Image 1 (cartoon, rainbow, N blue to C red):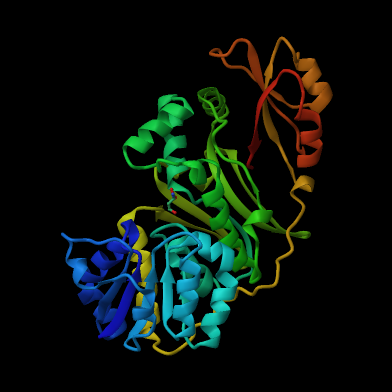
Image 2: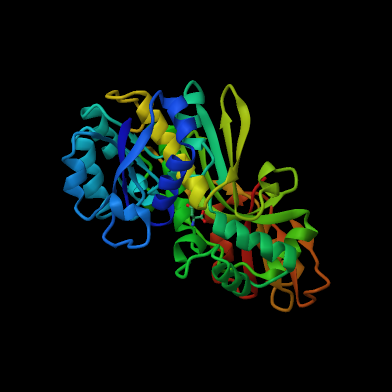
Length: 404
Ligand code: HSE
């Protein structure tokens, strides 16, 4: 029996205990022996839960127990998860985490510590919930030069955008409903402002480059400014709006961004709806591939943590290398990247001829529902050039990037 511990008995932590219990037979067959949860670390008491029998409040009880070989870190946040994870790795215990914040902040360092102590720092559950995208990048696609990773990596915002599209509803109304149904947090900022997606694409971009992509260097825009009218225009253009997290390899480095984009029906990401995630990966030999599934939620995420437990359990005392160094990856200058933009203009302030004179010959989109305005698809131009024309322009209502 492999002895394990869980740091944090919240939604995901209790899910990990459940997956280990319910799928014990599967786990035993995969690992060659069973996994037993010897300790659960949490500050709270759980009087009515059987977990009380293994509950501890002091991390050192776990770290100092030589029987414990694997730890599932499902605490979330930076501290004390960072300190507790380092303690465990330094004691030679593998750590399997769902904590994207910690992975995005300290992934390379924690992998290095694991390598130095003959154990592992695994983080399958940090991106894409139950979708095995991390192990796919680390194993199945390791022979590939990854050229592009673009994805819908936040379930909450995808749920909101799907509802806005299908019901013609306003952002605030859908957010409220999502909160009532438990699909959005009481404090939804990390999701709706794109911060969660930013951390996830930073992790994917780091694995793509083998170096560290700092999430603070990634341009991030959320979905809070999108309106029902934006979706009407999108529909008229045969498109929809998705919060896209992307990292593309260009001649100037990795071009990374999180922003709402207009994508067309031909894109595989167009069809990723509701709380699901979809991650598109292009390899130089492989070509296109896509990974789709439950991107969040207790059991899908817990299952991914347990997948890491199985992997660590299969190779006791062995460090399995992950190509992610602390050296900073070179990022391309987003302001120089080119694309088309969709802009909404107040027609009383910006006649069509003025839009054409400012932005070049584009395409005009009219909506019966919005007679006082019109939409304009610009020709391809750099972010910098576009911003120079758009920012502060009287009569410009909104703009959304177009993803080809
Ligand atoms: N809030 C996140 C999401 C949870 O909606 O995708 C999973 O990371």
